[in-house]
Amino acid sequence: MSARHLISVALLVGAVAPSAAAQPDAARSLLRGSAHIQTFVYNGCPLRPKATDSRLSPLTVRVLGRDAADMWRIEIIGNRIGTFDAADFLECADGAHAENIPAIPVRFVTLLPTGARLDLETAPKPQIRIAASHRWVWPVLGALWLAIPLAVLLARAINKRRREADDIPEPAAVESTLDEFRALIETLGSRPLSVAERSRLELYTLRELLPPDADTLGAPDDVNPYSRALTDPVSAPVLVSLERWLHHPSPPPGAEAELRAHLLDLAARIAPRAEASA
Figure 1 (cartoon, rainbow, N blue to C red):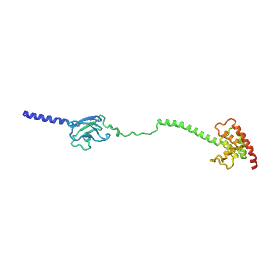
Figure 2 (cartoon, rainbow, N blue to C red; figure 1 turned 45 degrees about the horizontal axis):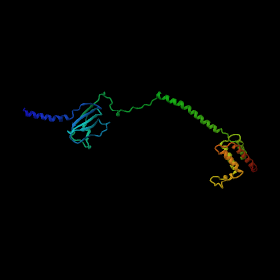
Figure 3 (cartoon, one colour; figure 1 turned 120 degrees about the vertical axis):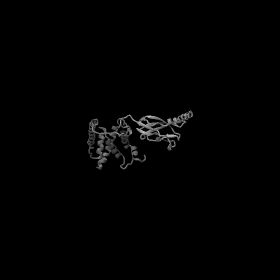
Figure 4 (tube, one colour; figure 1 turned 180 degrees about the vertical axis):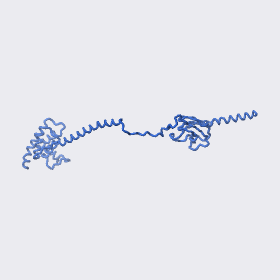
């Protein structure tokens, strides 16, 4: 073989060698979950990874870049064990299918023993077993031990309050309104009156000092029976004394004795009329 032929063969081998080196090697074993950098030559459209669900896709591919000689660099992460073609996970940047892209075989293996579950997402959820156990029996018994006495004490308190309400004595029967009025006046000097007794005492006093059909709500002062009674020399002292003792926040000393004297005088005045009507 002449020297010219040897030079031609050498130039041909030199031209083909870079192109062959740029193509991806045959699939070699990689560990599952590891990242692998792969280079390949492709002079077609700009590439991008296909949109996939990383939980279901066996590979995760990321495009790292492209140089002036159409040499592409991609990163491949194996999510599943097995042999796959990373080219199936690439597409044109506009979403079109990448034509004539070379095969990029990769094979991912694991160091775990055969039959070991690899994906926690697909592992069955543990079932919560509810069974009798001393760990919850004792807290429940403790809660019942505290709740039962509290319920008994509450029921006793409610029953006691009901019995006290039932044991309230009824007011003693009186022969007439005048007798009850006198009884309230006598009680006024011996002990504090209850709310009901105060109300009856005020009612009897107003009933005697105001007309039977008097309407004091919303009436003008010049025709209001209560206002007119306050100007009467006989009724005014009684009403003023009643207001001072019954409605004043802090009645002055002697207000109760003053009211009792006025009420005794009022009872003495109405006694002849009550006896005549009887």
